[in-house]
Image (cartoon, rainbow, N blue to C red):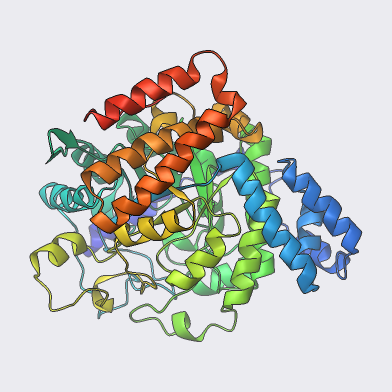
Length: 507
């Protein structure tokens, strides 16, 4: 697109009037002075107070800012051990022992922004730019389906060529893919989106084509840092346009939204507080908080000095702590750890309450097809930084990660039932807070895990998976909740149908 056309497009993207209704006395919900006061006032918290906060989390109640600030100030390692254990217990009560899997698909790395930490930044001349055609997107989707995935998150740079119309077209293209597997067809059942903030009208376009969750990361809630890493003359330089992106999505009818921060740009304690305030404001204005929270760490990126030299980079030990505090602070919300992190770190934070992750991940534009067709010199596990936004820490296959989790007694779920049964938005939040949704999800997790074992698992993974699924069936039989009405009877019939080769059956 010609320079003048891009310039004109940039000038009409931001619609400040769409934010105004959400401001309070002209102010947004990030009050830095208040956050700093909470962190200062809760220094050296009393251990008994911390244990009372933990009990509140275990009751699946969202914490208040001063309570979260107290957790962030804990220095006693024994107390941290109690918090780690509580984080996993919160996760078990709300989500049971399942881990939901997805695959990211990068559709475009064209971008008009110039974020200091990102490989997609406009001034990065070493990045090889590309936008996928709909045919290429379907080729990528086919590869992802053949790994065994059922849900996908599609990712785009901010550019007129990857606008809402393009995003909507890519979602339709993904849903249209049907891949033969044994005696049936497999497909992607839910498409989530990670993209630039949109207007209400553009969000409605995505709603119409069946978008799942819309995900926008604020990157940093600290306004001076935000201004420093996002040039003022770029779209992303507008703090409030991004801050209220998910409010506008909710207004447009997208009732599952996802927040996140890029840890390593500023003090991790401040960012945790920012995420909490974001959740609180969504609850205040819409009655429901975020569907998921993400907490990616700054990773090396092509053409970015900051990505390797930030003074705020988060250590592995602090990363585990921040994940734990988020788990306790917003106990009903899903939490996503991605292949940015090493296998070792993913094991650690899954153990304190994460609920979703990815595997077999390729984040280069066109990366899945290239890897399959050996169009690149890269061997398994190697990466080309000139084709992706940042470097990954874990490049293991889905089969490997599924097997590892099964060995730990965690069942992999590919379930998308809740979204298609209407258990979204305020409906699913009520079920999550009441620790009911996890029970339905346990049944659907077993059904989808059965599908995976029969259709995709290696012999080694299937052997371990069969042991796990037997234990899950036994646990379901012993759980009184499942004996209400005909729930257990219906599940057993469905399980037999899946065993006999039927697919996409859910409660």
